[in-house]
Image 1 (spheres, rainbow over the protein chains, first blue to last red):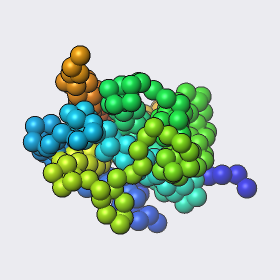
Image 2 (image 1 turned 30 degrees about the vertical axis):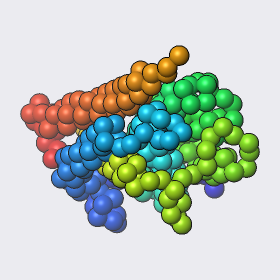
Image 3 (image 1 turned 180 degrees about the vertical axis):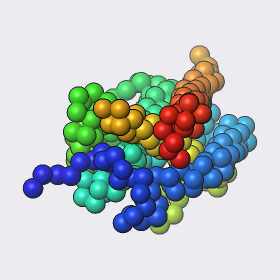
Length: 258
Length: 50
């Protein structure tokens, strides 16, 4: 059986008929327009508070010294690069299996945002590694699997944009997003499976080994990154919905004229 | 020789804020352009869609 198209057919997403309320892009745009400024303000506010607290108020680490301040941006960017990829893969699954009209747009919206978060994680990690480990980069499990995550994001973006047949490109991107989830447990457990310079997780479900003076700015910064990620995805979704509607208008006009 | 961590911290924060700020501005500009084009009088008059 042929897999369904990831791209919506003209007319599908302009009707609320047979679709869940939020699956209608017009309703979604209204909700996103309402939520975007609040999420953005929350994201920027929390990120600002977390970074000010992390840079100026948190104590230096007894081993790493002042360089620990880089971790207030490195760690949250890593968390949401991973979380974003999982979200993108779920959206790709929804697009392929249930043909949810907004799911394919979600894949396209999340990919560049996740790629930026993964890039920030890699670059800030490298900058942190130079004074701490004495090297910018090592090919160990955690760093390499994180680089693979970044390349997977780039692969999804490339497939969406570079394929001549856009529907096919979106379908291929969806498959890559789903297959790439194999990399997520590899990133998570790489520090336990292999010898690595990278330290194991300091925050687990059972508790945290981080002092509250350092944990507070880290969590504030993480909340800021989360809301910023969400608002960036909503902004990209609104853009893609508007562009798709413009494209469909052009198609309808061409059909009418022809 | 004393180690100065400041350039590393500044570089990390510059990359983060530059990257996030750049992506945010680019996304907002693209969204504004697309939504203005969609709601523009010329577009609506041509099609009547809204």
